[in-house]
Image 1 (cartoon, rainbow, N blue to C red):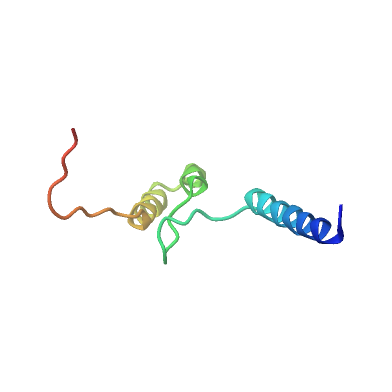
Image 2 (image 1 turned 180 degrees about the vertical axis):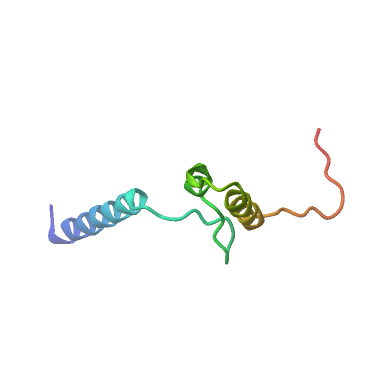
Length: 78
């Protein structure tokens, strides 16, 4: 194998390692372009809140952070 091929394969392998590593790193779920939506863990942590009024307020905040989809016009499903 010549030097050029080794360099290209090495760069490709390094890029694949970086991409695979990004999949393993913890990240927040992005529900929108500019605003992060709630994660599944956020909803699971609701169970840890003992005070009902605080839990209801936290749930309301999470629901308000959910992305909404608006459809203008009609939708046909056939």
